[in-house]
Image (cartoon, rainbow, N blue to C red; front, side, top):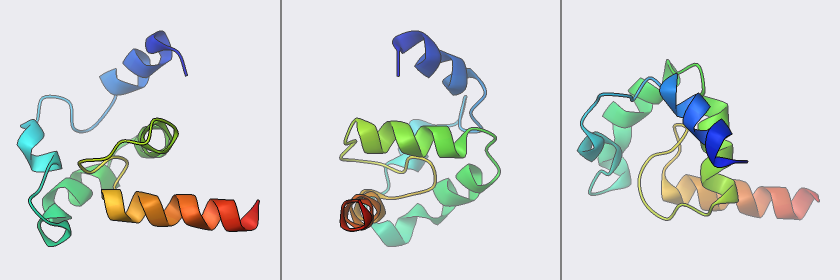
Length: 80
């Protein structure tokens, strides 16, 4: 994914303009507000793939916490 394509999908993200702290909750249990925003986002899947490819370690990306993203990556490796 190029920087240009990353900028393109981010412009359409539902989180644009929202306080970034919402997407960096203290615990997974506190991630519900971020996940609710992500659930309505038109680029949610693209955001999630970006986080998976770039191994984002913190925050909610594409509606998934870091723990959930690790689980997704493990499942993908098992089925590959």
